[in-house]
Length: 72
Image (cartoon, rainbow, N blue to C red; front, side, top):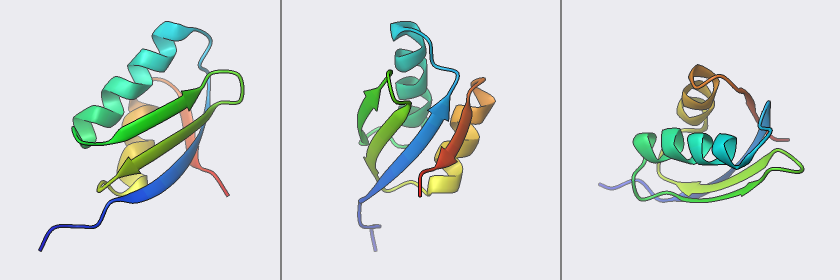
């Protein structure tokens, strides 16, 4: 049975430019190639609709060099 896609909101610190935004998108898409992603560089908010676990996404973004947490 396939997992249902859900919306996860991440808070990401350390993004300073468009290249950072693209790097964050790349690592999320590695975890779930079908994810839809909306990144706000100004606020550090990353909205993801995905079948991946939030903990997997935060781990991937952290491994890429950014501080990531699931937003409250």
